[in-house]
Image 1 (spheres, one colour):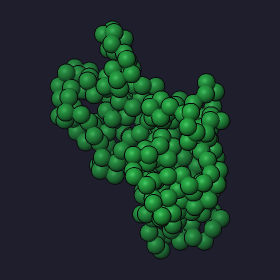
Image 2 (image 1 turned 120 degrees about the horizontal axis):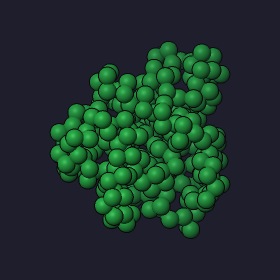
Image 3 (image 1 turned 90 degrees about the vertical axis):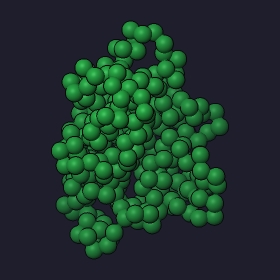
Amino acid sequence: MSPDRSDKIEVHDLHFAYGHTCALKALSFDIPDRQVTAFIGPSGCGKSTLLRCFNRMNDEIPGARVSHGSIHIGGVNINDRSVDVVKLRREVGMVFQKSNPFPRSIFDNVAFGLRLHGMRHSARLTQAVEEALESAALWDEVKDRLHDSALGLSGGQQQRLCIARSLAVKPRIILMDEPCSALDPIATAKVEDLIWTLKQQYTIIIVTHNMQQASRVADHTAFFHLGELVEFSPTLKLFSNPAHKLTEDYLRGTFG
């Protein structure tokens, strides 16, 4: 992507298919930078497929492709042949539904991406790991056991460790796919507080089935149904006065 520090995401007439099956249809909307945008909708509506389009993780699926339209980040078409996908995935980080720490130490988990991208200097690594753990609100909990296995952390701590691992390589955008679905309410609250803090520096997109979570953390919310964008608006407006009956029915639990 270009040096342009705007992290606005522009989706224009996007169609995405798995083989002959159309999963996303004619999506057009802009995602503002330095804010939290939530994707909501019933299972199978295309939320996670779209999320993976932003760092081209769908490229790994045989037959999956953008069949029409474009996605621009900071003015750059990310599906252009000239785009370095490795760099794109560094700049657009991903946090998954299930925490996935490596069976290594806490320190090595956070340092993994830094080493992968060539950082070898011990003092620089140590500083970068500490900064990432502080940014993920985890440093005070683990600073005395950095060389213990990450698998010994609680579920909520593991998820924040995975966030720290993503933050360590200095992304511009953070994608979160149901990051709290496996967490208890206390751990969920810590991750939500963290999301609220991180949006001061990062553009964040979160996929969630939890309506209350979307209303708490998101500045804007997009509602999808059957691969189509039904409504995209400021979160307060969407939840209090939806423009479409389909959105209202979903929020009321009529379907989904």
